[in-house]
Length: 188
View (cartoon, rainbow, N blue to C red):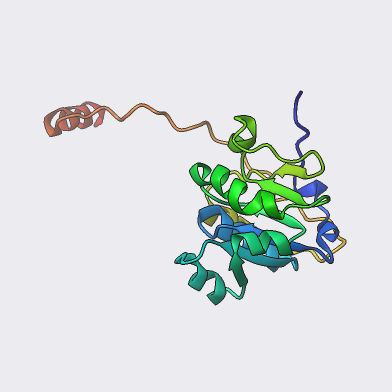
């Protein structure tokens, strides 16, 4: 069954009005999602494990920070921005016991769901918001757009030509002598 793909043109930030969004994790993806949502007017809290070094940074960025379980308890929408290898254990320990009917889980990609590492309740909505790029790029692109107000649709980024994926082959090493001879052959 193919998934329905939504883009910025489909987004209505009014859906977050009067909702609390918890971003679990404040690393590469988590900080970008949290800051972009905050800039768009959403009410965002951060969930981190006790002793996380990211607590200080998230607080400096103006967020209320809670232990992961408490953030899930307080939130209507929970964005799981944790590393793949930690998601299943955090889900079992902190997320699952604090989920209730009507809450929404958001994942940045589908590994945990696809491979059955996480099996959400049937009364929990699960969505994926898969940014194209690392968190700092998501943040930079998010800041380039004017944040829409609640109830208005987000504007889509300008269309960009896509470049082919980079080659996985390493460049061939050449000696300085062969580079000089190649350059000499090209010279007029």
